[in-house]
Image (cartoon, rainbow, N blue to C red; front, top):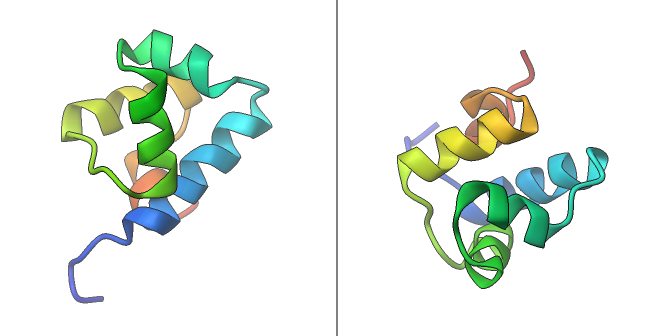
Length: 74
């Protein structure tokens, strides 16, 4: 591993986890206090969320940062 993050793959993982919990993009965005548009960008990998936002996403989806960022299961 070269230390870089695949933001497209990370966004896909976030989308999959969100959908598995029957949460809409709008609902998650509201919980995170970000716009639905920005949430969409995160899921498409076209914008890079802050570490704080990633921590909050993980908390809301009840997963670890490793699961979101690297795709590593606990």
